Length: 183
Image 1 (tube, rainbow, N blue to C red):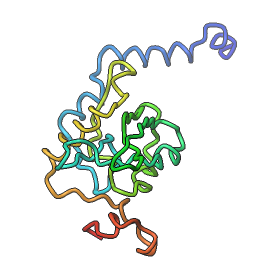
Image 2: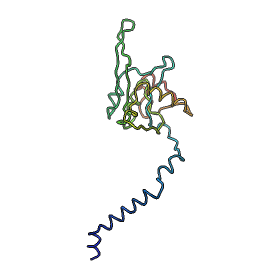
Image 3: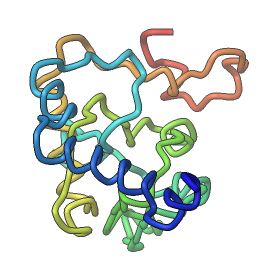
Image 4: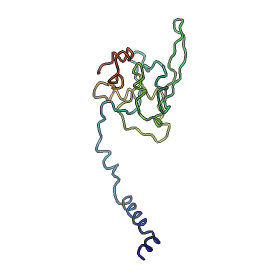
């Protein structure tokens, strides 16, 4: 008779709902309690917000528009447009637009690893949000701004372990990666 009464009036479900309402109405959320007070330090090589490395000479990106990062990206979140210019009688490819949709990115780091000139970086910033999808779409200017912000707040010189992954003979790297300091 007792089990029929419990089944008929859904006693277990009502107990669960009462517990949920008690937690929602009378207790502080755990994430809000801890998040502001404890700021974890990311480990070296942490894969956070994207940035394009700014050239000190031209003040633009050092990207050579080879499209390797775009081709290797498993989530297809990198978009590159190039223009061909004539310089000294030779056609040369130049970067026109560079964009990353961070809402689609899986932060695998393949794009950083494959870049022959170390132009793309996954910085150590992990606290970034957006109210709209467009806030997580990084165009070229925003990527350069991310680099400036990262370098301004860097406590140590920037080194990315993906520039020279361990276990790969140095002869396989581009000249830029062979000369990179840190490994």
